Amino acid sequence: MRSVVRIMTLALNTVREAVRNRILYTLVFFAILLIGTGVLLSTLSYVERERILEDVGLAAIRLFGAAIAIFVGIGLIHNEVDRRTIYTILSKPLSRTEFLLGKYFGLLATLWLQLIIMSGAFAVCSLLTNAPLTSAHAAAFVLIGMELALLVSLATLFSAFTTPMLASLFTVGLYLIGHLTRNLQDLGQRSEVAAVRELTIILHRVLPDLESFNLTTHAVHSLAVAASDVWFPLIYGVGYCVLVLCLASVIVERRDFR
Amino acid sequence: MSAERGSAAEVVRVENLAKDFRVGLRARRQRVLEGISFSVRDREIFGFVGPNGAGKTTTLKILMGLIFASAGHATIVGHDVRETEFRRHVGFLPENPYFYDYLTGREILQFYGRLCGLSSARANERVKTLLDWVGLAHAADLRLRTYSKGMLQRIGLAQALVHDPRVVFLDEPMSGLDPIGRKEIRDLILRLREEGKTVFMNTHILTDVEMLCDRVAIIVKGQIRYEGTTDQFLEAGKRETDIVFSSLPPEMASRLEERGAELRGVLGRLEIRVAEKDVTDVLREALAAGAEVVSVAPHRASLESIFLSAVGKAQQRGDSR
Image 1 (spheres, helix red, strand yellow):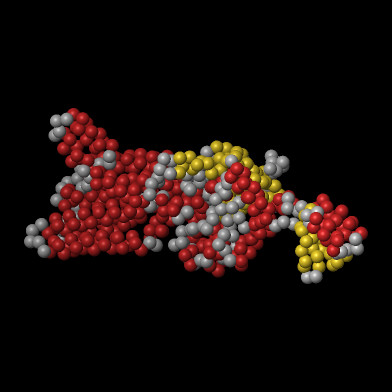
Image 2: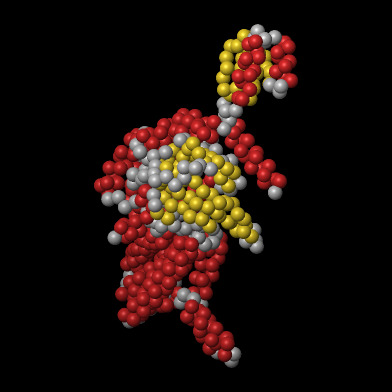
């Protein structure tokens, strides 16, 4: 129970840091601006106005969410060491894993808060332009939230042992590959070389499959979303996050904070 | 080394601590601490003294569990420093501390209090007491980015005490402070001892050691060169005596010079510095020759000169290897 209180204390402080940090406000402002731009773009078209609005809006939410997750996440542990704030925190009776989890959940809570704000802006724009809002949109936002959780866990992992520059390269790399592993596997299956086929299957299974969190098509075309389309990615995402955070914890528990 | 090690009232015990860092592209091992052993007793102010780069902060980081020893063992209040448990009894103020500057003084202390497992009500109570204790009640609701260096050092001391620990570790607590700030921190450290806390202090400011510390350990190039009471340490320099004469016959002065005594004229008087063992003979001879003695005073070398001499010897040993 005490452990939960300590993790909560660190998480709340991380949220407070974000709330008092104006840079994040700026990013959210630009995301909302981009969603608004979708309204403008849709007025320039005679056909599929709603589709343009929703495509641009959802893409803005996904991209800005991912950008904030990666670029704040990569400094999550490193900045604490660099600014030496970690010295006084780890001298208190809490474990390094509690510290890691506190920072992780704090950033995640911040990102989800921003996702709610951006989703709200998207809903307002949709209502103003009479674009449909369906349960597929809600499912899409939930899975964007899960994707952000996974991205933050990856950024936290890299932040635990390397510099922000390398951590950003690794995380952005995994983000891009994570959206391509399905295509990579499909390509691999067309290969006549068995080793290539096997390799692409292994890559698809080991690397995060971020496309499984993408319900944009369902939302834009108001397609029905089966429960399994949400639950399976959620279980997959939570499992992947737990594994990544366990790995980050092993690293943080062993490393020297010089 | 102190012969008193092993007493029952030890709160910190360090045995044969060593630390290797990996340096360069090939991650070559470089030993920065070697065979560090010392102990700190209950309710004393212990000075861990050494020049920059001697290994003071590295030792302290091992004690705080921030880095891990390559060899050896350290316990605080009976707990291994690799455990989390011992930190319930320990407060730590790092050198030039940095805190979340978007928080106010009150918020940062509440934050640390909650991390230490204090209930919200207990944390609030401790925060109020500590803000008064360090004299920052007036600045409690100002953000830390508006604090001066001295104020940050005081809030740092308050956060180290938020859970009422038995032992307080301070890394260069007077570093970068003006004379007023240094006096404020010095007074707070003395109050800690009055309140029954044990204080471990890393420092290279020797006047602070002389004024505050009951015992010291001297570390040079990653090795302990001395451990004992500050008084004993200072005694090591009390080997000469200054004798001041209002008049001294010239033949006597030449004879003393021939014996290697150091003569200086000061305000019409003659001062000589002689080895402690020669004082009786010199006085007897001088008085018999008709000299008039004004004063006889043991010459106490400053901690600084003794320290520099210890560092010099260590460096010579290092060079001759």
